[in-house]
Image 1 (tube, rainbow, N blue to C red):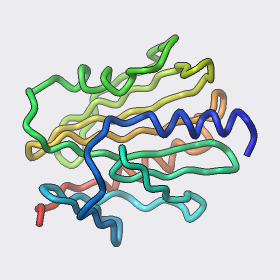
Image 2: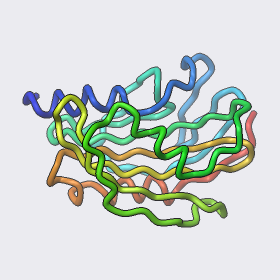
Image 3: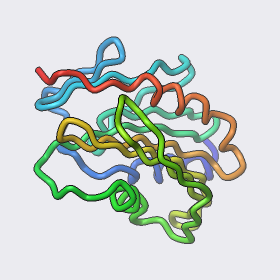
Length: 171
C-alpha cells in the first residue's frame, strides 16, 4: 500500500463519531442489527473489503485505490440538531474544508442532506461525500472518502449503498 493510500486509510479510521462497541452487532444479507436499531443498506461490488472499526457500524475499503465508505447510526437521546449541524460534526479534524455542493434529497421517505467537500487531514487532500438523515429517533450518516481527483471512480457505489437504505424495526 502506497504512502498516500495509507494516509487516506488512517483518515478513514478517524472519520465517523464513536457510537459504542460492537457487542451485539450483526450484519447479514445487507441488514445491520444492533441494540435499538436495525437497517438495510444497498449492495456493494465484491471489490470492497469490509473492515471492522469500533467507530463505524459498517465500513469498507478499497486497498488498491484508497477509497473508503462508512455507515453509522446513533439512536441515543440527543438534541434535535439540524442536518447541516450534524454534517459539520463529521468534518471535525479536517482542515482547508471547501464545500463543493450541498442539496436536500429524500432517502427512505425522509429528508436528508447530501454534502460534498474537499478537505485535508494531516496535509492529505481528499474528497468527501456525506449523507445525513434522521428517522425513527435515530441519526444515520453515510461517508464516502476518495483520494483527490478520484471522486467519480466509486461514487456510484456510495449511491447504491444509500439507495438501498431502509430503516427496519429494531429487535
